[in-house]
Image 1 (tube, rainbow, N blue to C red):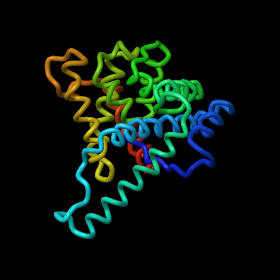
Image 2 (image 1 turned 90 degrees about the vertical axis):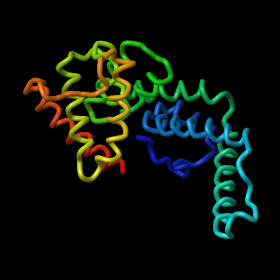
Image 3 (image 1 turned 135 degrees about the vertical axis):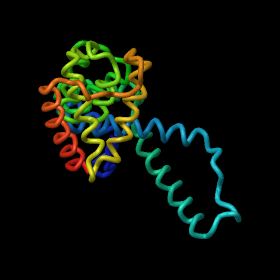
Image 4 (image 1 turned 90 degrees about the horizontal axis):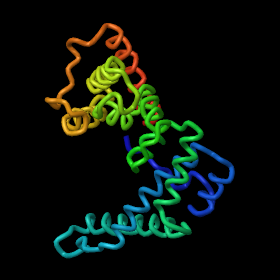
Length: 225
């Protein structure tokens, strides 16, 4: 799930924060900043294509005020991002590698999404999926099991736990989006005949492991919420 970013979490400019994280090898800080650099990339694109409607007579006074507030927030974000010396992609890669070295959950899947296919990164994705990270679960359940060093039984457990968590009365709706996406991708990415996960005939051990995983997923989302 997309993290909620607190841009006032650390003192100094974004550039100074990046240097501090790298110099002190602060894994959680590096992960936080890597996520912020993703927002910076988006902000740069928004700034570059200002074809969005400006406030006009067709908007109410309240809507115009909200539009101005949004533009001011975008500008503040963009100004903060401009303090970065160098390209976002290269710096973000260094931050993610540091976070991964420090075993920060979620860093492996971000490296994977950036195209890194090292064995340790693939193993990290599998470990984070088993820890209940939903983005890692999406990929670990959609691709062929062996890509991440998983047995079929282990992947069945991940899929079953993913499904159970998607039915949770409190956080299930937020999990369901990722679960449905994983099912849809399992055809083209995993080479399965149908894009639906079927837990009806999995082993009892996979069923038990899946139930335990569902608890971890729910707890993780609640603690991050």
